Length: 295
Image 1 (spheres, rainbow, N blue to C red):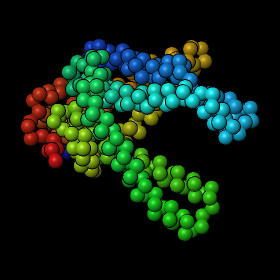
Image 2: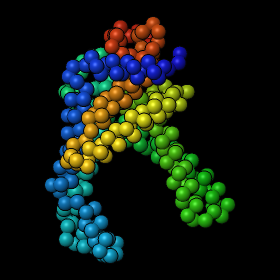
Image 3: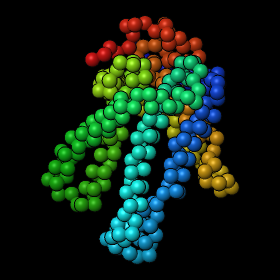
Image 4: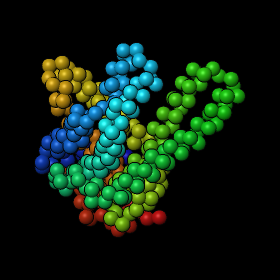
């Protein structure tokens, strides 16, 4: 069974068209609860980055700037770090919620704004799954970087070239390895009994042979992303910085719904054609034996 990228994207657009409330409205709410909230927190709290940039522009050394911040703003710095840590966890839950919303929308279940908070219904599994994905990605990257670093050292490559090579290889490795775990959230959503560890393992197993297809699906949105960024730049010249372009709010649910269709397509949806989900998808008719089995 192959993956039809064009059918998946077409089904995603159809699901968006039929969904009520409008996915653009839901995405606006998600944006307000994440990006705008982050901006508000940064505005209300002391932000050391502002002073670091300011004093560095005035010619102060790094040690002097750090000593000043720790002496004059120690408590503010601790509060800023603590809030950033809590907000990063909050963002994980909200990202999971948006994934849940997009999956339900792609299946024509008519989800609403309340599904953005699905991550808070299973916080430990979402948090642990996120930690495992980051940890495994880091370990794989280190496993690749160790021999690369040894080869560069033996080859007596100059420091600047070695740094560029190491940085490039590490970024490519992390990007490639991340595709192994892209389906983890979906397995947690579909199986109430699935643990975080099982979800990560199922994603790794399911993605064997499918990473390139998902990569091509991602690449197919690059043109839309560039157009959205250019439009946002033009609007920023005449509108307040917090008012971004509506194309971005349309593109986000489109991308997430297409990814949800990818998941449904390769895990065996109920349609006889074996294609992606969409407006005619009947999730409840899914056969018991379909999809990967628990480990």
